[in-house]
Length: 241
Image (cartoon, rainbow, N blue to C red; front, side, top):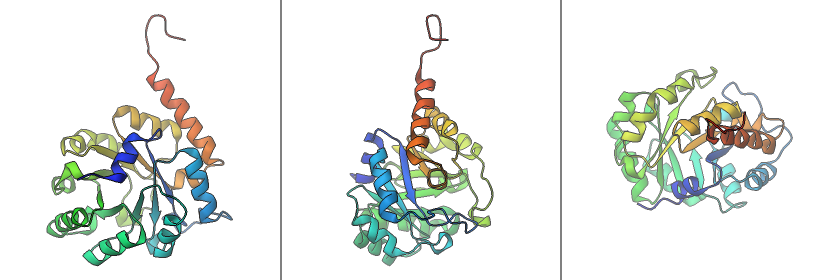
Protein backbone atom coordinates (compact mmCIF):
# COMPACT_ATOMS: atom_id res chain seq x y z
CA UNK A 1 0.00 0.00 0.00
CA UNK A 2 1.25 3.48 -0.84
CA UNK A 3 1.74 5.47 2.36
CA UNK A 4 1.76 9.26 2.23
CA UNK A 5 2.99 9.35 5.82
CA UNK A 6 5.86 6.89 5.29
CA UNK A 7 6.88 8.39 1.96
CA UNK A 8 7.00 11.88 3.42
CA UNK A 9 9.11 10.76 6.36
CA UNK A 10 11.57 8.84 4.19
CA UNK A 11 11.88 11.62 1.62
CA UNK A 12 12.12 14.50 4.06
CA UNK A 13 15.30 16.40 4.81
CA UNK A 14 14.68 15.74 8.48
CA UNK A 15 13.82 12.24 9.72
CA UNK A 16 11.81 13.66 12.61
CA UNK A 17 8.12 13.25 13.34
CA UNK A 18 7.44 16.43 15.31
CA UNK A 19 4.70 16.25 17.89
CA UNK A 20 1.98 18.59 19.08
CA UNK A 21 1.37 17.69 22.72
CA UNK A 22 -0.09 19.71 25.58
CA UNK A 23 1.40 17.82 28.54
CA UNK A 24 4.09 15.29 29.36
CA UNK A 25 3.43 12.00 31.16
CA UNK A 26 3.47 13.73 34.55
CA UNK A 27 0.97 16.36 33.49
CA UNK A 28 3.49 19.18 33.13
CA UNK A 29 2.55 21.81 30.56
CA UNK A 30 4.62 21.69 27.36
CA UNK A 31 3.12 24.37 25.15
CA UNK A 32 3.41 27.25 27.60
CA UNK A 33 1.85 30.34 26.11
CA UNK A 34 2.29 29.09 22.57
CA UNK A 35 -0.76 28.27 20.51
CA UNK A 36 -1.18 25.24 18.28
CA UNK A 37 -0.88 27.39 15.12
CA UNK A 38 2.38 28.87 16.41
CA UNK A 39 3.86 25.44 17.10
CA UNK A 40 2.74 24.04 13.75
CA UNK A 41 4.20 27.08 11.99
CA UNK A 42 7.55 26.47 13.70
CA UNK A 43 7.51 22.79 12.79
CA UNK A 44 6.73 23.51 9.15
CA UNK A 45 9.37 26.23 8.97
CA UNK A 46 11.95 23.92 10.52
CA UNK A 47 11.30 21.22 7.92
CA UNK A 48 9.07 18.66 9.61
CA UNK A 49 8.11 15.94 7.09
CA UNK A 50 5.03 14.99 9.12
CA UNK A 51 3.40 15.79 12.44
CA UNK A 52 1.98 13.75 15.30
CA UNK A 53 -0.96 15.12 17.25
CA UNK A 54 -1.53 13.68 20.71
CA UNK A 55 -5.28 13.48 21.19
CA UNK A 56 -5.10 11.18 24.22
CA UNK A 57 -6.46 12.51 27.51
CA UNK A 58 -3.38 11.26 29.40
CA UNK A 59 -1.49 14.10 27.76
CA UNK A 60 -4.20 16.73 27.85
CA UNK A 61 -5.27 16.10 24.27
CA UNK A 62 -8.55 15.87 22.41
CA UNK A 63 -9.81 15.24 18.90
CA UNK A 64 -10.32 18.92 18.18
CA UNK A 65 -6.53 19.36 18.26
CA UNK A 66 -6.18 17.02 15.29
CA UNK A 67 -8.91 18.82 13.37
CA UNK A 68 -7.19 22.13 14.07
CA UNK A 69 -3.78 20.93 12.92
CA UNK A 70 -5.31 19.39 9.79
CA UNK A 71 -6.68 22.83 8.95
CA UNK A 72 -3.28 24.44 9.34
CA UNK A 73 -1.01 22.21 7.24
CA UNK A 74 -0.99 19.74 4.38
CA UNK A 75 1.71 17.64 6.04
CA UNK A 76 0.71 14.02 6.80
CA UNK A 77 -0.63 13.67 10.33
CA UNK A 78 -0.52 10.87 12.89
CA UNK A 79 -3.36 10.54 15.40
CA UNK A 80 -1.68 9.51 18.63
CA UNK A 81 -4.16 7.96 21.03
CA UNK A 82 -5.07 4.56 22.41
CA UNK A 83 -7.00 3.11 19.49
CA UNK A 84 -8.90 -0.09 20.23
CA UNK A 85 -11.89 -0.04 17.85
CA UNK A 86 -12.62 0.34 14.16
CA UNK A 87 -14.80 3.40 14.69
CA UNK A 88 -11.77 5.24 16.06
CA UNK A 89 -9.87 4.44 12.86
CA UNK A 90 -12.73 5.71 10.72
CA UNK A 91 -12.98 8.87 12.83
CA UNK A 92 -9.21 9.47 12.57
CA UNK A 93 -9.43 9.47 8.80
CA UNK A 94 -12.38 11.86 8.87
CA UNK A 95 -10.39 14.22 11.10
CA UNK A 96 -7.55 14.38 8.59
CA UNK A 97 -5.09 11.75 9.82
CA UNK A 98 -2.85 9.81 7.45
CA UNK A 99 -1.65 7.37 10.13
CA UNK A 100 -2.91 5.96 13.42
CA UNK A 101 -1.02 4.78 16.47
CA UNK A 102 -1.59 1.12 17.37
CA UNK A 103 -0.01 0.21 20.70
CA UNK A 104 0.81 -3.49 21.05
CA UNK A 105 1.12 -3.22 24.83
CA UNK A 106 -2.59 -2.50 25.37
CA UNK A 107 -4.07 -4.87 22.78
CA UNK A 108 -4.54 -8.64 22.63
CA UNK A 109 -2.48 -10.02 19.74
CA UNK A 110 -5.51 -10.84 17.55
CA UNK A 111 -7.07 -7.42 18.13
CA UNK A 112 -3.74 -5.74 17.39
CA UNK A 113 -3.44 -7.60 14.10
CA UNK A 114 -7.07 -6.94 13.19
CA UNK A 115 -6.61 -3.21 13.75
CA UNK A 116 -3.53 -3.22 11.52
CA UNK A 117 -5.64 -4.73 8.76
CA UNK A 118 -8.49 -2.28 9.36
CA UNK A 119 -6.17 0.71 9.23
CA UNK A 120 -4.82 -0.48 5.88
CA UNK A 121 -8.35 -1.09 4.57
CA UNK A 122 -9.25 2.50 5.44
CA UNK A 123 -6.16 3.89 3.72
CA UNK A 124 -4.26 4.76 6.90
CA UNK A 125 -0.69 3.83 7.78
CA UNK A 126 -0.50 1.64 10.89
CA UNK A 127 2.06 3.29 13.17
CA UNK A 128 2.66 0.29 15.40
CA UNK A 129 4.40 0.77 18.72
CA UNK A 130 6.31 -2.05 20.38
CA UNK A 131 8.66 -2.42 23.35
CA UNK A 132 10.02 -5.93 23.04
CA UNK A 133 10.52 -8.89 20.70
CA UNK A 134 7.28 -10.60 21.72
CA UNK A 135 5.25 -7.57 20.65
CA UNK A 136 7.27 -7.24 17.46
CA UNK A 137 6.49 -10.88 16.61
CA UNK A 138 2.79 -9.97 16.56
CA UNK A 139 3.19 -7.33 13.85
CA UNK A 140 1.67 -8.32 10.51
CA UNK A 141 2.03 -6.57 7.14
CA UNK A 142 5.31 -5.14 8.37
CA UNK A 143 6.09 -3.83 4.91
CA UNK A 144 3.05 -1.55 5.13
CA UNK A 145 3.63 -0.40 8.71
CA UNK A 146 5.87 2.05 10.44
CA UNK A 147 7.25 0.14 13.40
CA UNK A 148 8.21 2.35 16.32
CA UNK A 149 10.21 1.19 19.33
CA UNK A 150 8.92 3.02 22.40
CA UNK A 151 11.76 3.86 24.79
CA UNK A 152 9.28 4.49 27.61
CA UNK A 153 6.87 2.28 29.54
CA UNK A 154 3.18 3.10 29.25
CA UNK A 155 2.55 0.96 32.35
CA UNK A 156 3.98 3.90 34.30
CA UNK A 157 2.17 6.38 32.03
CA UNK A 158 5.57 7.23 30.51
CA UNK A 159 6.59 9.10 33.63
CA UNK A 160 10.08 7.59 33.88
CA UNK A 161 13.06 8.96 31.89
CA UNK A 162 13.03 6.09 29.41
CA UNK A 163 15.79 3.88 28.03
CA UNK A 164 17.24 4.57 24.58
CA UNK A 165 18.92 1.16 24.68
CA UNK A 166 15.47 -0.33 24.07
CA UNK A 167 15.63 1.08 20.55
CA UNK A 168 19.23 0.07 20.01
CA UNK A 169 18.56 -3.51 21.06
CA UNK A 170 15.51 -3.91 18.79
CA UNK A 171 16.71 -2.07 15.68
CA UNK A 172 17.90 -5.11 13.72
CA UNK A 173 14.81 -7.17 14.53
CA UNK A 174 12.57 -4.24 13.60
CA UNK A 175 14.25 -3.97 10.20
CA UNK A 176 13.90 -7.72 9.70
CA UNK A 177 10.16 -7.39 10.37
CA UNK A 178 9.94 -5.68 7.00
CA UNK A 179 9.12 -2.09 7.83
CA UNK A 180 10.56 0.44 5.40
CA UNK A 181 10.79 2.92 8.25
CA UNK A 182 12.00 1.80 11.69
CA UNK A 183 11.39 4.58 14.22
CA UNK A 184 12.79 5.30 17.66
CA UNK A 185 10.13 6.94 19.81
CA UNK A 186 10.06 8.84 23.09
CA UNK A 187 12.77 9.86 25.59
CA UNK A 188 14.85 11.51 22.85
CA UNK A 189 15.86 14.80 24.43
CA UNK A 190 19.48 15.24 23.34
CA UNK A 191 20.16 16.18 19.68
CA UNK A 192 23.40 14.17 19.79
CA UNK A 193 21.55 11.02 20.86
CA UNK A 194 19.00 11.66 18.10
CA UNK A 195 21.80 11.87 15.53
CA UNK A 196 23.36 8.67 16.85
CA UNK A 197 20.07 6.79 16.49
CA UNK A 198 19.78 7.88 12.86
CA UNK A 199 23.41 6.96 12.31
CA UNK A 200 22.72 3.51 13.71
CA UNK A 201 19.99 2.90 11.13
CA UNK A 202 16.70 4.35 12.31
CA UNK A 203 14.87 6.03 9.44
CA UNK A 204 12.71 8.14 11.70
CA UNK A 205 12.60 9.67 15.16
CA UNK A 206 9.47 10.50 17.12
CA UNK A 207 10.07 13.62 19.21
CA UNK A 208 7.63 15.73 21.17
CA UNK A 209 8.78 16.67 24.65
CA UNK A 210 12.40 17.19 23.55
CA UNK A 211 11.37 19.78 20.97
CA UNK A 212 8.69 21.47 23.03
CA UNK A 213 10.99 21.87 26.03
CA UNK A 214 13.90 23.14 23.97
CA UNK A 215 14.77 26.80 24.25
CA UNK A 216 14.38 26.94 20.49
CA UNK A 217 12.89 24.29 18.20
CA UNK A 218 15.00 25.62 15.35
CA UNK A 219 18.10 25.56 17.56
CA UNK A 220 17.45 21.95 18.61
CA UNK A 221 17.14 20.88 14.99
CA UNK A 222 20.28 22.81 13.99
CA UNK A 223 22.25 21.01 16.71
CA UNK A 224 20.85 17.66 15.55
CA UNK A 225 21.94 18.36 11.98
CA UNK A 226 25.41 19.41 13.15
CA UNK A 227 25.89 16.16 15.07
CA UNK A 228 24.50 14.19 12.16
CA UNK A 229 26.98 15.82 9.79
CA UNK A 230 29.83 15.02 12.18
CA UNK A 231 28.82 11.36 12.26
CA UNK A 232 28.75 11.27 8.47
CA UNK A 233 32.18 12.87 8.13
CA UNK A 234 34.92 10.50 6.90
CA UNK A 235 37.43 9.36 9.48
CA UNK A 236 40.98 8.51 8.47
CA UNK A 237 44.10 9.97 6.87
CA UNK A 238 43.42 13.42 5.52
CA UNK A 239 40.21 13.88 7.53
CA UNK A 240 39.83 17.10 9.50
CA UNK A 241 41.04 16.72 13.04
